[in-house]
Length: 315
Image 1 (cartoon, one colour):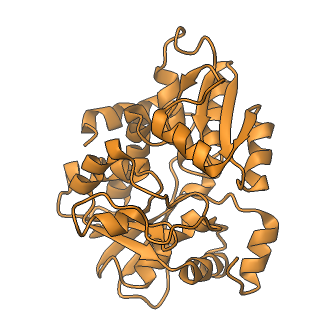
Image 2 (cartoon, one colour):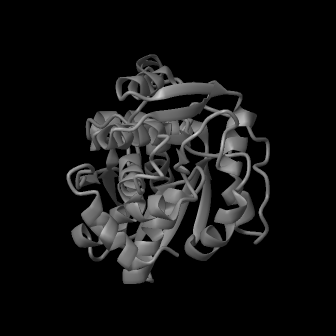
């Protein structure tokens, strides 16, 4: 668990970079009263700016001397590139070959240098916290406690805006977002249920949590939900996730696509696949009843893919 004091300090540290995003009601036929935490409204259109800025603003001049490096499907890349530009240092981003062009374009606009790798090699960089041939401070998108503390500032805002919260639903890739949010929420309101949402094609936590043993995602396959899901749970994250998460849900891809359409139609919010996971899970009843906050984690989706989804397809 990330210490509450660290999360509160992170909130002060990221002021002026990350914004306090609104919590808005989603009126929909569902077992719960659903609220949406719109991280799509951050300067990089995702929550990742919180953790990236917290990590890089804490780094020393010596640590930053050769720039910064991260491995990301796109959103952490943008957060790191944004924070590196602010710090006046170069950023190198290792991305999987199938990363959406929208996210790659945004990285380049922010001054980041892109290095493409196979999904397997990219995942290896995440597991090893390094990438051969690239120097610089590796800002891990998941395991860095400074990143998790930055993510945890969302939890502080949730409880201030909705003090009688019953559950929070968080999309999961590596687990850094839910670890930060759950650390804040459980420290202040331990009775709040923490539910995670993964795409059904890449849901190792949903497979692992019921058995208590880390398990690879059954039938793993990459999908249009590129910002969440994984082949397996990162070993250093497993103890945190087992401690903090109450329920882990695998969400069918058709439900994710339907949630993207619903958010666009009902609240005029553009969500990427990962951003629609939590609302999809809550609408299906996986978070139970009462007041449920869903983290709409990002809105970086290719226009062509979004158009297909709005037309009724599941890419």
